[in-house]
Amino acid sequence: MLWSIVHISQATSLIGNFRYRLRLCRRADSQGVHPWTYIQFLVPVTPTSDCKRSEPSQTLKMAVAETMTEQQQSWQDIVARKQQESRDLIPKEWLLPSTIMDSLSFPLEKNPNKLLAMDIPRKSGLLTDRELAITESYSVAELLAKLASGEFSSSEVTMAFCKRAAIAQQLTSCLTETFFDEAIARAKSLDQRRTDGQQLGPLHGLPVSIKDGFQVKGTEASIGYVSFLGEKSSANSALVEILLNLGAVLYVKTNIPQTLMTADSDNNIFGRALNPHNTLLNAGGSSGGEGALIAFRGSPLGVGTDVAGSVRIPALCCGTFGFKPTSSRIPYRGQKAPSLEGWKPITASAGPLANDMEALGIFTKAVIDATPALLDSTAIDVPWRTLNPANRARLRIGVLQEDPLYPLHPPIKRALAEAAKKLEAAGHELVQVTSEEGQVADAMEVACEIFSLHSETSMQFINASGEPPVPSVAKQFGPANVGSYKFVPSLEGLDFVRKYALLTVKRQEISENWRKIWLEKKLDAVMAPAAQSTAVPHDTFGWPPYTCIVNLLDYPACVIPFGKASRQLDPVATKMNAEQAGPEYDPEVLDDAPCSIQIMTSRMRDEECLKVGAAVNECLRRA
Image (cartoon, rainbow, N blue to C red):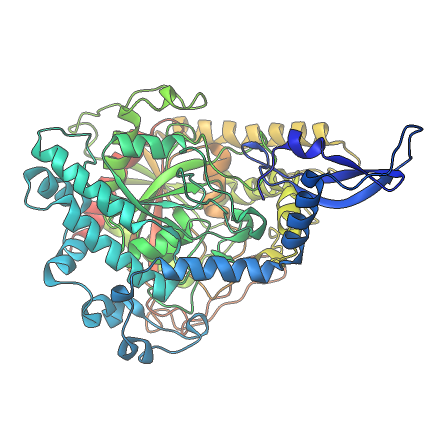
């Protein structure tokens, strides 16, 4: 039922001797007043002297009838309809055969199905040998080169990734929206343009997946809220527009958590995105669908968003590469957000995920070269800087130490130690940054309090449909020392403005401290944990201190997969003490989960971050 606010607000009628008015219930989203306006009930208004008995107007009858229909639908009914629509969009010939499904242990999220090791795309018989090669054997740069040469057509590359994404969806629930037919039609059009000598841009013909919050005209961006279902985006997000102008083929949108603020991409509409390495473990969040899809090789290049680690956490959980740029270097306009419009105390970033490091730079450079400020007034109008490849072959890298309030799991400690050895062996200089200097716990206090300043909007969106919060939202994880902060003083008794001002001062203290670290230690970059852990059992990840500090500082950072958890190498389980926070380490459950490291540089040095990340990655891959 789509009504304009003005139309509905004018719908009154005389019934009997009383004037009845429609009382409105309005919601707001990132674009302003919510286009769906529900009539709550009719309210009798004191009759006027000129009231005459009359029948309700036809407009009122229709409004009440349609409203009753909407109100009679439970949130479960609405979800069931959406789920059926989503299932119907997967072609029947792409459905997995029963032999494959019979080889899995159900329910998937409660059993350790190691999907990647099972090689399901090959065993299913749904992809040709050429399609398997297209999706498995090439980096993004190699795919783009073969597309440019004509060795691969966009049509066949798009078809291959559409089919593989459909398989991934049946196993991991990684998708929210699919538009395969439109993607294949666009790919054919791009092939014709290439034949005609017309190259759209550096991503010409490449399939690209995007997180659900990006708006694509004609599709939904429900971001995991039942109350947002049924709303078709009327325009593209700025980044979507740029990707299309660059020649990309958009074909799927990916799963996210309810509220977009947990590391478990789980919601009541699309279910839980599962980790293809082990379905018993989380895929990360809030771009968890992207992490799962990329790891399954159902996409060569994906785009997520990151306000506390939402690109980097899925990357570390699923064993992919991920990059969080400095905020506003990649355009963010047109995002669907679960927050009060205009409230951006910590600015989110959009960034890429991929299976190779080089792809992160290809994406970032292509988008920045497209001058995002022309489509987004909040984008920083700073051109891409091409760095001299000969500069600083020997890097000076800080190594951020473990914070005692957020202790690292043994596999993460081992991965960082092995990475340090490889870097030193390659001639790079490592400099220790102590936990006291790094202020990870202090940053977590500030970020937690900032995020909690206006958290009621998300719950209002949940309550609007009657749906319950999912487990990771209901748990309401807190930082290690909640109730006894050491860095943030008590905010009790302060009004909203004074709270925000005080937190801004404390945030600036941390930023100033880090400015001094860069200068005094003469660092090119810092290597840090990406998280306390690898992927962990569902709904246990908690707060992300080692990624969140990067957002508080607004630094660029990339996650590089390196090593795996091992019950043989790290056999002793660990638990948190009363003062600490984080998931517990179980060597049996986490065995073989991907490990990772994080590389960060200071603000606006995105080019340096990607260059150092590439150098570090090359070093880590050496035997």
